[in-house]
Image 1 (tube, chains in turn brown, blue):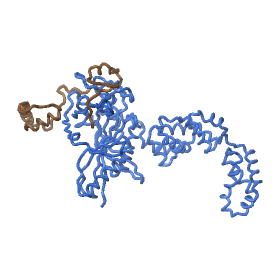
Image 2 (cartoon, each protein chain N blue to C red):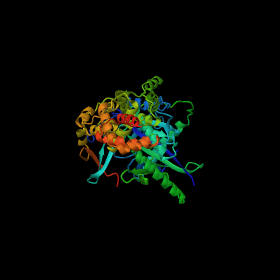
Image 3 (cartoon, one colour):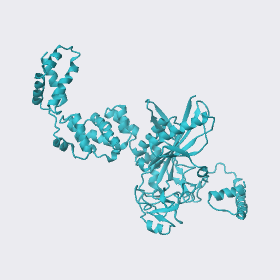
Image 4 (tube, rainbow over the protein chains, first blue to last red):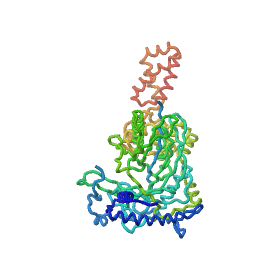
Length: 95
Length: 482
């Protein structure tokens, strides 16, 4: 599998980042190198092998349903670009 | 041309945990904006999610309630998209290995028949925050209190064929999740939200192209949205057009749905396994323990109500489906000692007032104990049914206990037989013509003629005579004149 410039542009759009022309070339090249490696890995026959999420066989630890967080709105909003009435303000998302 | 409608539902159900699915922030409804949004909910760098055990238990509880297979190993994936009320830029959800696998729910239709709706799966995920688009100097306001609230998304198979079936299914699931205590069921607060997938086809043909209408938060909106969408699709096809696969947004204010713009729709979610969360493993013993803790389900309760209280299937259904109504009825019935009368009051007068004042039974101003005390006064003949309705109205307005209201309003029914006999004698004496007619009438016609006398007696007693007793005494005295 390999990707081209159009794919890079699409990815940039989905990730909401601007990719310049030269970067697009370079990115396509390095991503294709990674994909070549993935192709190699995929050549291995994995029939009947359970996918592994973690090499240590660890499992998700669960947390008790108890409130442990207090209201720290002031501290969080001190670093926000814009707030009002306790809300975070962002550029309008609908017309 | 006969068209067939095919409907599938996705139901987002907020779990009634105290804290978020991945953080220890409170999920309590109605807090001031962003006071329950902690560093994890805000996606601050360096934070890591830790899964809430109670969310897992509730999801499994739902699974065993619908007899579904439980995913003993389930895992979380990231669904990537940008929206300001989703601070991480992805929703943590379960795509590949959900915690609840195939199950089924039976729905009862109006014609009395039963239909099985298959559940494809249900998965755990987190809710997003809320965007407020009122005027903030041309900006949007974001409240992240809801961000990270645990949800299960219940995905049905496209097994429903009419808006009525879809609503019956939605109501059934609502009653179920509330009954087993995993959701508070407060629709107005968004505790349950529906996405409907609708397509139409001519009978016997292949499935048509479906559209998805999102974010319906009431049964009524859902029904209207489906009716409108079915009409739209049929009109489109009959005019030679084609249904486009699209996502539509329903507006509860205007009762119309619009297609989301292609840009909003062009989502490529790029799901991948969430590296921050390990697979969740539970064992069969855990599932069995949850199953053993399952409270009575609405269906079983319905059967018990028809058996032990001898209620009609209809009354049992109305009373058993909602757990709060069921509890209210059972308290009323046991305290007043007459289940049938209790059922009549709860499904009649009480339901009518709850409905007209738009109050949930959980917030009913008349408690079950108070209603039972009122019914007890009907049973011991202190008051008539009609008087009881007046007393109930006063109780609803907060005038206090039934006995005090009966006393204060002088509503005691006259059951003293001497007094009633006196009134009957008086009316008979002053109604010579009617008595004559009664004596000369056919036996079959006589019962109808009693109405006049009863009316006069009740008038004489200012409505306080016990009607049953009046009837007995009157009949006895009139028949003695034959």
